[in-house]
Length: 519
Image (cartoon, rainbow, N blue to C red; front, top):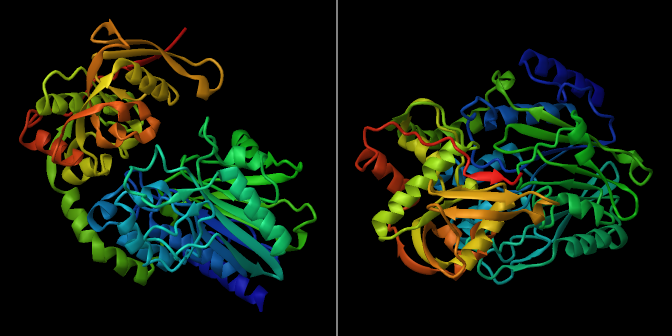
């Protein structure tokens, strides 16, 4: 019967232009196929470069499910935040779509907390998936009772244990958005849970779903967890948006690490925005005998436009009108494409924060912004209100604080570890890149042509997320609040473009890099 079903699935897949088991032969009957996503960030439709899209993803998932006996679909966090679907509907769309896709196991990402823990609890009550949190104690939060420390599933007579490992919320999740949550150390907790699963529960393999990043030095990421672990066989990661592609030499090396017992750990991650789907194949008969899981990434693109799921289509259409109305409300233009990964957009944003901060309070000395706050590109030509919100989707507020120079210096050191962040045009920084990234440090900091003075108090325009220590800029928390805008950042910027100083002006900035590596 299985061979007949597999052949039928292959014929159906070819007639629809879909891959049969991801362009590979069907796995052996006693194989478990794990499909995984991470950091899909509310990308319901294909992105601006026509990559991704949940309809295409479902076509691939359905094709593989039709060809394989044992399929497990999991998600490693940050399913929300980044498009108008989250801005308008607060996470409801993503939960309903993940139910339709049939996600079975999920963990939290840091952006799940963006609207606060009460909103998070309300949204995750809509999710049908099993929810894992091994190193978060949620008993004193609205999420109490919703999460399990581990899960055990059985396929082909073998038991598979799953755990959920999350990052330390301090320094990355806004204070007040995770009240009551108790964080437990990553490596110690993961090893305790994995040992319990192997020795007490008798599982044959342990899979860690993680949202800690691949190598967020000096913090603990998937690579550090892998080499300092015992009993964990596979780590399915998220947070850092790494594309770990086994077809490349670098990806192959990054995906196969050795644990404390000299055993191989498979470490995987798919990037972001649902542009790729991860696929792991485990030969269940080889578990405990040195079997090596196979791993590949599947590009989610226009090849899979031939099949439409009516249930999923109806769900998307329920919300799409509100998104489309904002995406066609034109508010300005740009002379050239602005990419969120390049200095020009960050410079524009930083200089505008300086200008907006100066409107709020006199005597602003400089501004500081964060690269991670910019989430989308802006195409050349006219742009819409929806596109601006997609670039700046977070409900942050322009904030002016007074900060002592010595505390500000520590903030520049933190920013150096990410090869710089946003600063206003009157700031220039040279930084050292000697040793590992944890040793990167700002060396020459000039503000309006003058060296940073540790004993001087500087007036800094920034956003409230950073002022509260976000992105590990703890030095800013020692500042004194001067003034905060009553409007969210995207609303202030939209006013600037439609009614303020930016009205009828091309949206453009300087391409210079304000951070320079020491020679």
